Amino acid sequence: MSDSPARTNEYGVTPTAIMASMAGLDFVRAIFSGKLPEPPIMQTVEPFDCTAEPGVVVIHSVPGFRHYNPIGSVHGGYAATLLDSAMGLAVHSMLPAGTGYTTLEFKLSFIRGMSKDSGKVRTEGRTLHVGRRTATAEARITDAKGRLLAHATTTCLVFEIPKERPKEI
Image (cartoon, rainbow, N blue to C red; front, side, top):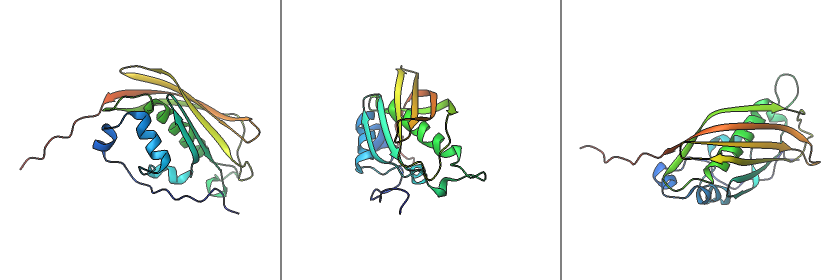
């Protein structure tokens, strides 16, 4: 049995000019629908059934044996990747075209361990505040029974995406 559903999406980095030309919600939805490539980091968690609404992003994934740490459970980096991604994309979903963000800090709390037997997990990121210079968000990972596995908060820097300068001859 496979650890997660088969993926057909391509992985890559969207050119800055394309990202800057789209409202944040449209950009996030284009990634989730496969019109734009998934970021390469997502190969590590293989998300599926992702949705985006203004200020809310949901990502489903299945932890597998490939995510194990030396002590025999899913490495915390798996949860950190999902939580940081969900919070960041929730923030991005609220930004106008020409605006970007980067994570300034995030705090993560592990509540229950995950294993290859955990099954499908749901990560939901929600914005708390989106301003001109900063944004805050929170996210939660729950298992199929709705039990909280981990949660996090973040502060992001919001900025204008620099216009590309013409190349000098």
